[in-house]
Image (cartoon, rainbow over all chains, first blue to last red; front, side):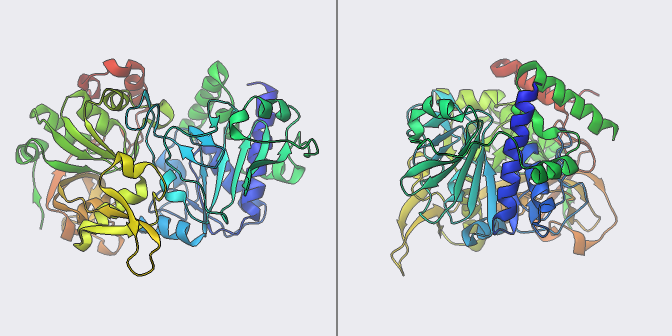
Length: 262
Length: 257
């Protein structure tokens, strides 16, 4: 893995962690190893009581960053209080839960798609399915963490509306290699950019972001947040999702071997 | 007290065209021993509900056993997309009802509560009502607020795989119960395969014996999906299926003795 992609991973995961720590939520629903790292780091950064959902009925788990442990990794601390599956949606409706998601498409109005590419009901490329995206239309916070700032993924209009346009009071933040963006009343705007972010934004016109030229540039995570990442993920599991090809495979194999030996 | 049966005996009771709910989520606790028995029995036109599917859906599709599929998502998680599921949707070879996790839970809860539908805020302003005729936009009769009505889905059978049961028939799950409780409450008959028997401790049980009709001893019965704490996901077997793509055949999911 290149130092560039590992630095990017640190920058974005640290930023998400800081955001989670400052959000007024009780539960954060993890979906990937990097999001586990972000949730744990948010606790380290001050959100001590934040629950990390490790499944539909295990909303207060103590997961470890892991790529191969599956349920054992999500329940590293042992069996948790057993919630009802409907509790997830009750927490979302109340605004007390935050979710991190990785849609296949995200559009200029904050709609999301994980179902398919192509005409509605006649997919040319079938994807996993809507999953929980239609269930996020609530005041709850949703973070999108993407490892690429791609015009294929960031579009003017999604092919299938899984997640609808959020209500006006909902906070939606997008973290990509271009920077951090937020959905406002007039569409997405940049909260800050990475050094190469402006060029990436220009290459994804569908999302409709107009830059003022005065956006802050951020090239490294703040030291406190980076320290939190290192404490909760000294193995750098968070880097894997931002690597590609052989580098990603090698990182995954190393992590899996370490977890198997533990 | 639930009766005990073999996977083969269970398969004999499930007819072609039955609406079956498959428990587990993603690559965890899929009742593959029971599903393999259905495939071996030559079942066809099954109507399958798998909230979050993986190799359960893949096996039944590869065997040509599915007529209708209800799901919020099917994938192989970090091993990638599900090849037979993708092909079925792209070719339109099965009737596909796309749900979200929340709306599918609502449909099961409606059955459990004995009502024809349940209103919810979920899936509002999405394309799901276009893709699934059991999700209908409407309004709340008291406030006029836009809501979505989700039609009840009554299962003929729920097929679950649990880590442990006890002699009284209670089911124990150390990990995520996911939607198994909702599937059990929405089914006419609940069949549970399990890894092992444990000492009875009803206060810690995840699923009451009141919801379980038949128990099927099946150590390793979720392979290659995981069953915490008994065994993890067999990542090699999942990757092998993924790499075989649309050529993946049911033989790949036969356990090697």
